[in-house]
Length: 326
Image (cartoon, rainbow, N blue to C red; front, side, top):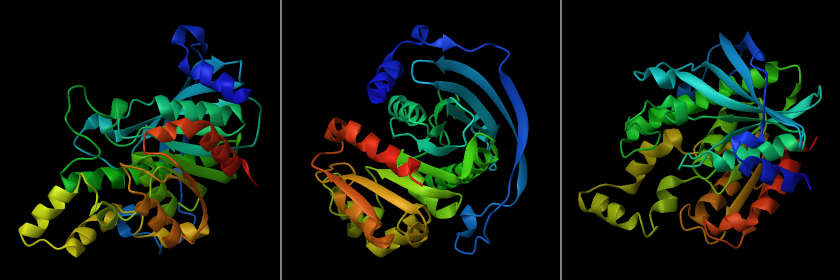
C-alpha cells in the first residue's frame, strides 16, 4: 500500500502537494573528518578534514505517506571554473518521527530527468529510510543554462575530473547525514541507477561511512565490458587500427572504474541488481564487480536495460530491505 501511495504522490503535479511554511529554513555547519587512515583510498579520492556550511529549506509535505522534502545546499570540496558547479544541491526526503532513521544517498541516471531518483527517494522515506538525492557534478542546477558541459563526455580528462568531484561531494554528503540527530550514523548507504550506480559503487569504495551499497543496472570493468559491445566495436577497431592497445585504455580508465578498488566493497554490504539481457551495461560488468567485491548478493532480472523497469517494484522492495536491515 505504501508503494502504491508513493508512486501516486511522486507522479502528482506540485499543486497536489502541501507547500511547507516559508519560515522553515535551517542554516548550520558540519565537519567532514575521515574515519579511517585512507590508506586504501587513491589520492584523488582522499579528503582532508574541513568544516562546511549548509542551508536547508523545507519545500514540500507529503502527509499521505509521512514524508517531508527539503532543498539542501553545501559547498563542494572541489572548486571548478564553473561557479554553479561549486555548490552541491540535494533533495532531502525525511520520514516523520524523531528517528534515528537509516539513510541512503540516491544518484541519478544519465538522462538526468530526476523522475526515477525522486521516485526511489520518496519510496525509501515512506518506508522509514531517509533519502538524500544529490545532484552529481554538472547536473541540474550545477550546470549553467545553455552550457554544453556534462559529467560524461568523450573528453576522458574532463570526465575523470567530474567523477572525482562527484565522489568527493558524496563523501561530504555522507558526513552531513551522519551529523543529523534524526539519522542513525551507523546505518548509512548509497545507491544509484545506471550511470549513478557506477558513481555509487566508487563512492562506497572510498567512504567507509557508507556501509551499504546498492548497484542497480551497473557494474565495473569498462574496457573489458564494452570491448565486444556492438556500439563500441567500431571505436575499438579504430583504436586498434592506429596501434592502440586495450591495456592502455584500461590504464586510462582505472581512476574511474569501480573494478579498480572493488576489494574495498568487501568491507561493505553490497547488493547488485542486474539485467541478464542488458543492452546498455553489458551483464559481464555486473558479474565482474560481483566477483571482485567478494561475491556478495546479486539478483538477475530477465530483462534489457530498459525493460528492467517492469521489475521496479521488486527492485525497490529489495533495496528497502537492504538499506533498512540491521
